[in-house]
Length: 268
Image (tube, rainbow, N blue to C red):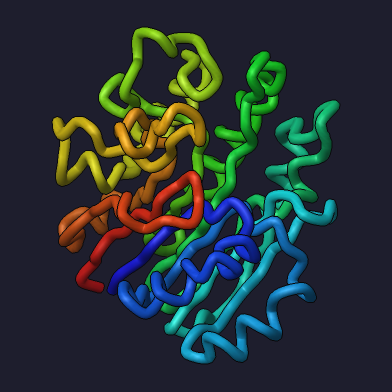
């Protein structure tokens, strides 16, 4: 089974650029997790269902139009669909700040299958002035607690844009970016907690020391062409799935967004 994750930075824009259909045709993911759809379900669902009938499609749109949002396209029918973070976990953590209520931004979507869960997440950005670091210190443990809850029922595969480079290996210029958005000690600690909890960073499990594996590039200064990038998109799995992990890849050749898709093959 092949699972892909892609922050499309506006799915209608990628479709308009004629980048989405060729991607699906070439790579044929069994499950595709999408972040930052920037679309309401009623704006896209009918068109996409007609154009891509091989996929069941599930959308979790933000209340604010043209903002955030997640979706999952799947060739495998789920047994249930779970939207957002459970209310009791929401109540435990403060997930609302001056920028808005993150629980109303379509940031988490989860499908339950017979033997596993697949969840996708679009983690809030810390902002250039780090004014949303406090939110991140609530959001990361909230989502971790949710994944741990699911993992107690059956294995979980979760992926998306975590808006953090975990280690110095995960960005081209770590020294210059120390303490900047996406590479603060608080954000990195939030991701460390997933690893300490036993979840497996699939790319580093198979490519522990490989540099230059980036998933996002600034649109300025030809950063993508020069591969001056960051790895902020991840696929993590329950430890019990590590033995069935066959490959973990990034796909920088796929254009259409400032992020590239990432993927794993699992012998499930």
